[in-house]
Length: 116
Length: 112
Image (cartoon, rainbow over the protein chains, first blue to last red):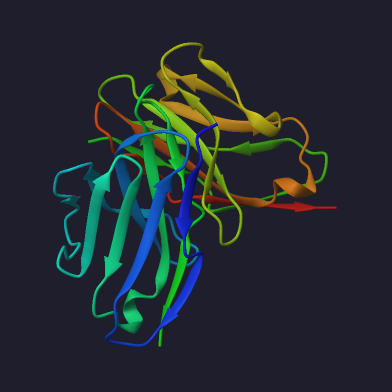
């Protein structure tokens, strides 16, 4: 089945630094990838939708200059949290849509970001 | 706009008992509906999905869900709970867009 690899699984960084999270589709081409943020004991909040080769579409209220998304190939999307602050600490999850069938969403295992 | 409502943020059952997790959707046209399971500090795993074919959908791990248009519901059931079923469950809807809209989730606890 389709597999999405998300890396790193956890990261601790200092305030003011930037962190990059990678999301790779291992055995399929993903025309569309999604980035979610999940606060403790809460649901997933869609942050942005990225399509290969074009700019990401951000949801209302999500700062695009803070959460930089790049989708340079059909198998890789990255989320960079710039100038991280403690309030950015959260669980980030990516999802990729499988190109051939188009009705499947495969999720990465998530990244726990802690900003100290 | 599409949305899903999950009634009950917590459900507790005894091992071997019936599991029923509720999900109601809001959509003006037949939606695609999904149930996902999430274990602590992990991503989401698809349990099953409804894509306008059979209304009774069977998924993995013995779970199934029935699409009821008249009730705008897509409740998740399992005849006999297992300890390993303890997790967070999310209902999600998608309609003619790429976006998945998630419910608020239901935490299932299974007691021995």
